[in-house]
Image (cartoon, rainbow, N blue to C red):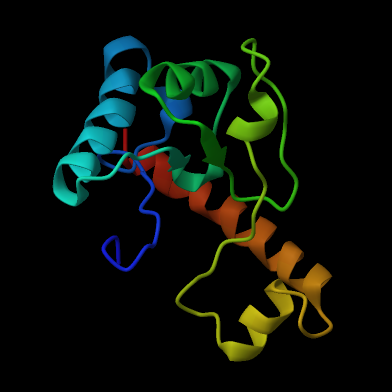
Length: 138
């Protein structure tokens, strides 16, 4: 995919809830994932998608320090909550695409057919349910 021109972004090293990590653990999740992808593709990694869509001002600050230029959350609405004044680029809202999504669901998410709000609700419910898995991935 990288050779075909697709951007490969980071989703961290071990998919842990970054808001529960501090210091070196948080830095390791962000930096080692970025480096591994860059080493494998030979291309710069500039984006991160936060596991479970969870982030905080501290996570955003560490992502910026690691060299990311933008970050994605699992919500259609972003949040500019960083002390580095780059929060608007580091918490970009998006809808997730899941294995249960079919063609019609994807078309609704892309606003090619009616039902975008339904997809937003589904996205929110799935994101809330996934919070239980963050307890396991400590």
